[in-house]
Amino acid sequence: MPHDRAANLRQGLADGRCRTLAMMFAFTQALDGLTTADAMGRPGLREGNPVLAPLVAGHLAAALALKAVVVTLVVLVALAALHRRRRVLFLRVFVLIGLAVVTSNALTIGRS
Image (cartoon, rainbow, N blue to C red; front, side, top):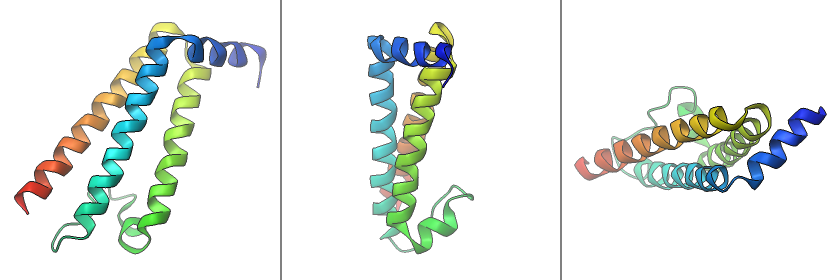
């Protein structure tokens, strides 16, 4: 990892906003996993993400493990590759996307 990426990562980890946003992103993704697992146990519901749908349908545990790896990589890339405001903006956008997905999942489960 080049020095500036390592420095970015250290700065990102030291920034309380980034740590909070990274935890919020991880939390929304965990909620997505839980709501997806719940939905898969209900008749007529399926994974809405066409990329993950085949994996979720056949191997839910593997899909959730893959999701955990992707979340970790997204956070590390955001912290290492982006600078200050861009890093915070990137993480905020991903938190909002996560909240939207979890809300959609919850509403879908509620209607089933």
